[in-house]
Image 1 (cartoon, one colour):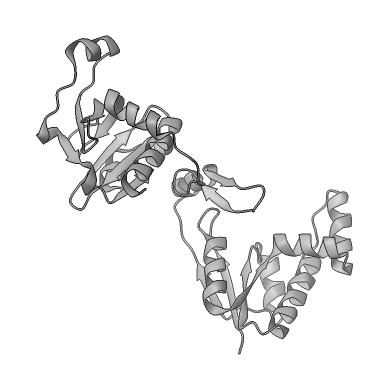
Image 2 (image 1 turned 30 degrees about the vertical axis):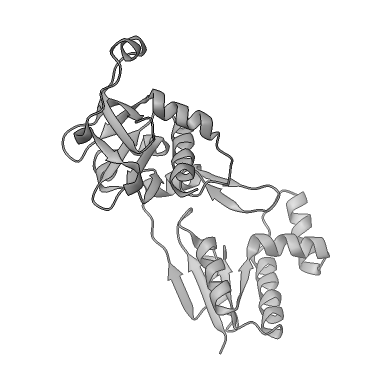
Length: 273
């Protein structure tokens, strides 16, 4: 019997990502309605021509047309030796679900229902971006596209120091000056100071206010750590960078998302090459 899978969940919950993984692992066919519409319109199938007329008239494509496309795709994928299929993006409404269930060969026998809180949905959707050439999906801050980092500029920033709000395991967040030693082996923090004071008084490196960079095993963005889940602000989600170590985290809130992005990519390059 064919494996007939339906993946559902709120926007940003990872439906398409899970569907693609299932297809790769289990030799299934991805049946995505958006792709089906494009394929049928390009091939000028009867369903594709009907869909194109609806789109040109700025009206919704009837469920029956989409269902015909899904059925045709399922038949072709099974004929090509696929073990089954995964529905992504259909059904979206109760009427579509009833129409799907009425067709035994299209009725799913396995359903994945993904759950995600509304704040996390918002954070994922607003950070989503696409490669217009490959169609690959990325996300800021969780899955950034590959980009070069000006490491000379990054190291200069670490040596000079930069202002951030440090979120600690105890107490309230505090403004701090963040900097490294000359060999970039430790990252220190101390009370924030103005630019003039920073030049005149200098920086004071104290071991009890530092972490070893080689101990860092992961750089994360967003409110991933227990510290930031407790004291972070969802509205500032993209401004958080955390250096994760086996026994602790260094959690920083930057003035803007651009600096947070630069620091994340710079630390990744510095620590992991």
